Every structure is written in structure tokens, then in C-alpha cells.
Image (cartoon, rainbow, N blue to C red):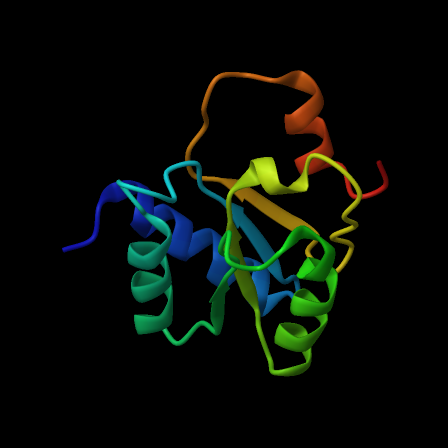
Length: 117
């Protein structure tokens, strides 16, 4: 079963990939109610090459993690947006989706969204 939000996400991601645009997907619930693994299964089932950045990857190793995954063919990455509040450029992903939000933080949200900041 696919939820309506998942069906729309699949549609948007497939459209982006068809235009050569890789995607970053942000989810907030990554611990007890982890939705990242479900999204990974849903997108993978559609033939999309997905990787999930977890908290197991230390902050100082995340850029290298992305580089390895991109070399291996990653089209979509799923991660918690809070992990990108400082110092990461995601220029490889011109399409960014927020599938969940938490307590609003303008600064954190802009950092996660704006590739040049």
C-alpha cells in the first residue's frame, strides 16, 4: 500500500530524474518512527537508486559519504534536515523535498534548502 503523499513523491522524483535532476529528501522522524527506511523501500521498488544518510555517519565524514554514493549511482538521498544546518553544499541535488517538518527554524530550514549558504 502506498500513501497519497508517497505516490505524489514518487511522481515528482521520477519527473525530476527524467530531466536529469537528482533529489534530496528530508524527513524528520528518523528514530523511533523512522520513515526513512519505508521511503527507501517505496522508492527502490520503483527502480530508483536511493541511499539513506543516517546518524551513524559522523558529520565530518558526510561529504565523503555523499561523494561515494554519487559515484555508485545514487539518484536520491534521504536524510534528516537538521544534519545540514551548517557547512554542506548539496549542489548535486537541484530538487529538494521536505516530506516531514518539525518545529520551525527559519535558519535551519534555509540552510537545508539553499545550496549556496
